[in-house]
Image (cartoon, rainbow, N blue to C red; front, side, top):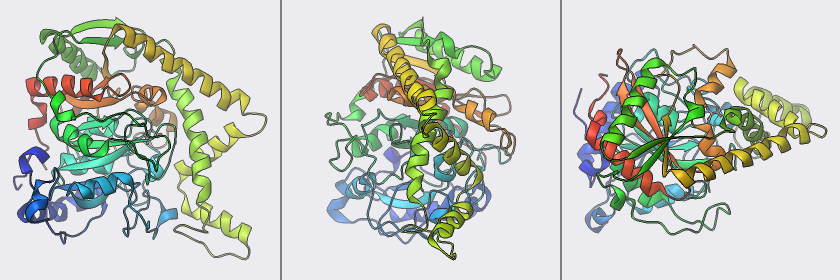
Length: 470
Ligand code: GLN
């Protein structure tokens, strides 16, 4: 294995040699991992001269395949968008380019970000670099596997119910879901518009802060982006949690957590305490309904967002006798099974006669869940939990049991329902060497507190130094 720079920070500014060595790694490893759907074959030019002053000058960042890049095919890992070439850059892509970054390849994912394992991609599953028989998590599993295996220095993911954090945990890297509204969604192909956020997936907490300095901020092109000033996130990287109050939600620590995950998260709470944080139990009483509420409200939004893919304007068109048949055939052949399941479920919960019983009720419970967080944050500054209830599972293990798959997001979904920021960082390994992640959730627009606590823990434990043997 060739050595690779551990972080954006260390590699700054990027060089042609760096891009060449990463390109070689992609050639070597991607056939095993299937983390990239496409990449630009090392033909990028590293900016010269003054541009080297830019914060990401020449640094390769890889992009989940649901974020539009001007002139490059973008498919959401779906057959229905095969051949779709967006005529514009998502705001996050313009921001990365303006900061000097090299857009280094597009990452595989669950189709339309529906899934927790990257097995619903129309272009084949992604494998976990720590164990090729296991899933990398999803839906941003290609981004996570690419970062963890050293094929790229950092990547962007999107998170609707856990899709940045759960794969980050499964691949032993850092993943941040920012506060809803913190990062522009313009050019992100929508799944659940009231949940979706783009965020960084990196090897270190510092790299996540460096990327957030570029990504965050108000965007007039996204009416849900918030006009809140952006701090310098790297300033919050202090090795100090003294006086921070960290809550353990009692509803999260019931049955169903793998014992090794439980042990590492308990250990993490002890480490925070030793470093001067105050640990206390808190209650988020409505969160046991989170998965149910999410699978009503998010699928309702998904069914509505996916209505535009009908063979007329984007990607695939299956020729047919008349217009209606063309719609049917295109959608039938273009969407995979999980996408169809969600379109049907979402259309059902929005239909006349069922709207009040499901969608409206779901929205009301969502409000209660959001209030739970507001109340808990009167007592604590952060909330600590496992990111996922289990370590990475085997490929095929949950594919025929959607409910078991949905439950892998049980700890990540509440932050999306409440709109609060949350980060996953490595907190240990199982006896068989699989990564385990812990999640910290914060108050809206207080990513700085997440960074501060995550950085302190990372510097103390140094789990990020361990790399998969691939
Ligand atoms: N795994 C969850 C789902 O299937 C979350 C996906 C996501 O965050 N995009 O919906």
